[in-house]
Amino acid sequence: MIKEKELPENKHQHILKDEIIELKNGSSKKKYPKRLRRVAVWDDVNKQVIELITNQMNWTANTIGELYKSRWQIEIFFREIKQLLHIKSFIGTTENAVMIQIWTALITILILKALKAMAEFNWHLSNLMAFIRLNLFVKINLQQWIDKPFEEANESPPQNIQQGILF
Image: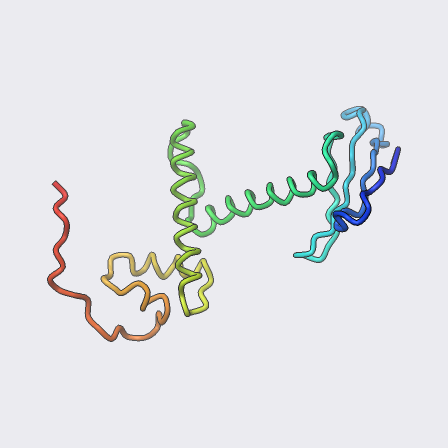
């Protein structure tokens, strides 16, 4: 540690430490001879201290902590895409194709989370996704089904619904 920066009083109590550091190990110092910044942040959600190392010297320690949290939410989003939607790689590789696939995945996850929030049944997102896959082409009352997925439907779906003309 080269220098410990002063923490703001009465603000951002979750910032525990803000230091200017330098790498000491010979090979590490050779690879990155400049000074770095170490910020220790208390994570209330996981009840642990997170230590962040950055070369950003101008931003406040709080800004660095908030950017890390935002970045972590992006990581969680991509994990959900991979796990829930079983997307392992992008079909198209152009910028437009990737953006379309990300937006489609985002919309799908938002719809799933909205359905989960509307349901009386305590769904896990992965179970809801699996059940929707299984019942994708079944005519059901969606609200009734997400509320009580293991009960028989009281009413049969209407038989004389006109399908819109496609062409």
